[in-house]
Amino acid sequence: MKDLIKVGMADLNIAKRPSILTTLGLGSCVGIALYDKIYKIAGLAHIMLPSSTQIKNNTNIAKFADTAIVQLIKQMEQNGASKCNMVAKLAGGAQMFSFGRTSEIMRIGERNAQASKEMLTNMSIPIIAEDTGGNHGRTIELYTEDGNLLVKTIGHGSRYI
Amino acid sequence: MAKSIEQLNSMQLDVLKEMGNIGAGNAVTALSKMLNKKVDMSVPKAQILEFKFVADLLGGADNLVIGILFDMTGDLSGSIMFILEQKYAHVLVNMLMGKEIDDITGFSEMAISALKEIGNILVGSYVSSLSTLTNLKLTPSIPDLTIDMAGAILSVPAIEFGKVGDTVLFIETEFLDDQYAVVGNFFLVPDIASYDILLRALGVMDE
Image (cartoon, rainbow over the protein chains, first blue to last red):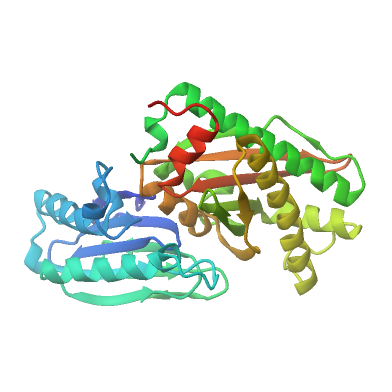
């Protein structure tokens, strides 16, 4: 029996083979999936905001792209993974409402995806696949067996990336 | 100073909850008038939840729900979201259009338009009661409607709350007519800067 480990909003977790990490209903949030292909250790974060430095109340490190990625790498390394084996996949960062509004609220998905990419690049982790943007929600499952990421949607199909 | 929900004292929280209750009560009265039939309301439940549990609302994070979003401008800025589970949205549409519930799979253009109108009525009266209560000028925008996973739709208000804290405040309201019950959820999301204005207007700002 393979464990299905749930990651909530503003939450992160890691798993070893053969468990599956999942996060449900990503909207403007971004799911950051890291995978050590040699040791088969995976990590998944569900971030809500791009940067911890712009927010005063930043105690929850899983909430921000920058701090969540650092923490995810740390926890994976503590469990035997190695950063140089890691690859990343991203999903989410949608714009759920289509108002022609100018406010930054509406572009938060795009900014979340952008910030995640910048942080991963800074940490020298290659981004090998992504399914970001658009205007629909996503549920993702990360398989520790092979690092496949299943992206499920309502009305936009499902696919592995 | 920006406030987060968890920094509010119990007095302030009670006032915010009560404000939500009054708003929801007015919304239901407006709905009742529009439908020209008696619509009752259960006592609204104001809840404060951590983000990781937000996804469990509304039947799970990947459950299909309808979210109607309004921008709020005037003395306060922010947004208001009204969220319904799909089955309840159908009940509401059928109440409005006076039909028996038949198709619960999809929504026609007509049904979507009806839902937006219901959203307009509910939010319009919610906002106007808020405005009366606080003596602040508030104007809701036209509605925008999205049908998708609960988690994805809830991420929109949750992210706004996320800028100031780690919890969300929302008001769950149940509407009942003689046959059906409908559970709807209001999320009032003031912008960071608007919390103080709101609390001061309600007379519970601690200086």
